[in-house]
Length: 110
Ligand code: HEC
Image (cartoon, rainbow, N blue to C red; front, top):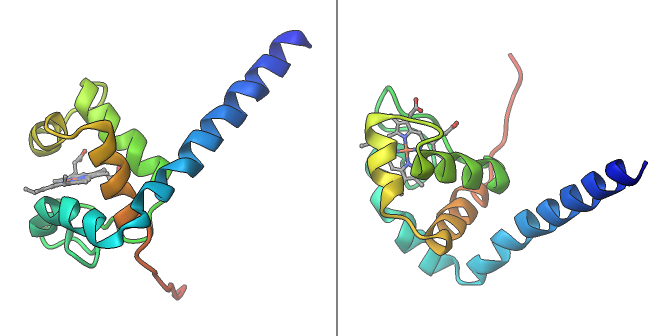
């Protein structure tokens, strides 16, 4: 019982931290400029410009943050992304994640 309470507290803290990330992009222009280095592959509109890159438009900020930190730590490896992530600070990651997650997407099921 104790233990599960601690787990819930951790989860809540993680969620709060994740929810805090987009707030950093109070300056959308600054977030866009930091994401500029990603556009050649992921697009300024978040739609991939090269066949092996994924679309990032509208993706959850928390997912993007985790993916980038995993590339940076080596937990997730990819020739290109491991290189890209190496140069990103936590602040850069929060900014680029908030940029791509704030792109509005509409979907239509087939
Ligand atoms: C030269 C092309 C290139 C550039 C530049 C690039 N990426 Fe990527 N990105 C890729 C490719 C290719 C993958 C797929 C990697 C894999 O299979 O793990 C990827 C994967 C990702 C993923 C994982 C998405 C998922 O669905 O799990 C994220 C997040 C990401 N990139 C963010 C960024 C950000 C942020 C930048 C700029 C700082 C950036 N990328 C710059 C090519 C690029």
